Length: 86
Image 1 (cartoon, rainbow, N blue to C red):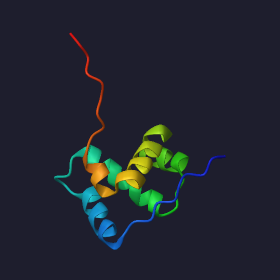
Image 2 (spheres, rainbow, N blue to C red):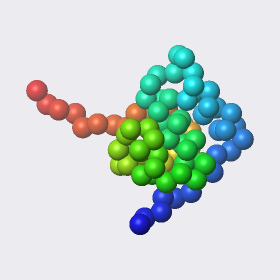
Image 3 (cartoon, helix red, strand yellow):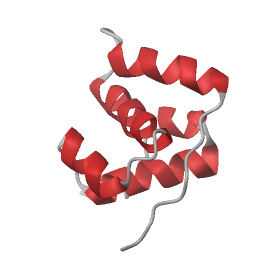
Image 4 (spheres, rainbow, N blue to C red):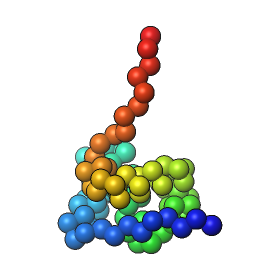
């Protein structure tokens, strides 16, 4: 079984992410990303996070990687998708 890379949130991130996860005006996708990272910080593995949040393990792994690569700013930007020509 593959073990996901460890996520350790800073004090600032630990203050910001719960506000995003529970904010009434937070976009749904931002709240979901925050919940993923809060669970990852608690040591929960991707398959368990995906089960709890009803998302795919691939999605959880992707947001974990994005956070590790870009920090909290990486959660705020959506991934670039290929342009479809008409």
